[in-house]
Amino acid sequence: MLPIIFVLPLLQLIILSNAATFEVKNIKFGYIDNDHTSTSRALVEQFNASTYFKVLTDFPSEALASSAMLEGEVDVVLEIPHYFERDLQKEKHNSLGVTINAIDGAAAGVENVYVTQIIQRFNQQLKVDLFQVSDKQIQPLTIETIPLFWYNETLNYKTFMVPGILVLLVTMITLFLSGMNIVREKEIGTLEQINVTPIKKSQFIIGKLFPFWVIGMGLLTIGLIIAKLIFDVPMLGSLSLMYLYTSIYILVVLGIGLFISNFTDTQQQAMFIAWFFTVIFILMSGLFTPIESMPEWAQLLTEFNPIKYFVEVMRMVMLKGSGFMDILPQLLKTFLFALIMNGLAVWSYKKTN
View 1 (spheres, rainbow, N blue to C red):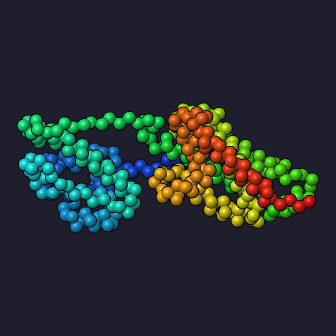
View 2 (tube, rainbow, N blue to C red; view 1 turned 90 degrees about the vertical axis):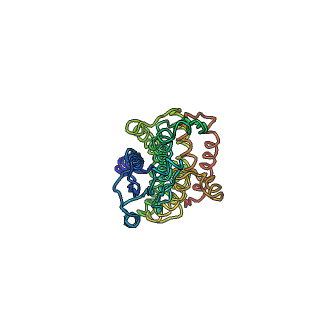
């Protein structure tokens, strides 16, 4: 149990924080250059210079490019038409063909944005290189936007994911351990011996859940240290505020684990039920996908998801430096969940006298 409690969560935090990313890199890029001019070669070089694209080959025909994409050899194919440079000089406009493998719709959308940005940047350069002086005088003024990124200036995806992964690990470990603990007592027969003692239900439950509350707080401490030392995640807010909220949140998770254990007879049953609800809570918590992109009915259901509030609070406090009043709505809802779940757990626990 000790490796499960302490070693595995640390490995999971390090591995998942590096693996669970929606950044799209090393895009396999191919092109069909029907023009073979300096302008077409300069456009291909723009993709070659990008850190996101891996330029693989020049396909002689569209059929070969389609076959390569069908076999998964390329993700993006750029087709440069005949007389690309000539038409740009004469007509001042032209068209490019871009084919993207869209089996993964999210990745295809990101790849399309990358391609569009590179082509737009190349287009700006062409305005200087190809247009004559007289043409420049009639061109409309361009508006330049300078973005300012708050809370994650380097756009490092690990900064966004590490707090959420830490929430995931604290939730899973405390839920599974608390759920299996009392079921284990049932399996070996010691629960019946405890039930005939004068100990009260509240005393028994506190004695069973308090060690896992301490373990959950310990996991949070170790996770925060790893987040700072390995991933250099900023911690702008108050640590005491994070510990205050986590102490209440763990009570919710322990209440859920105890409630599950009251209706199961084996550890396998408890694990299956806990995992079933954990997967739903995680996928609807905003950890991996934005809640705003979910259907309205799903957004309403997330209001009853305690993991959602923990993810929000961790990111708000660590990345934004939010204070007590900022997280007060999440804190009150989590406290209400703790009262309800632990009340149901105590009520459903049957003690024979």
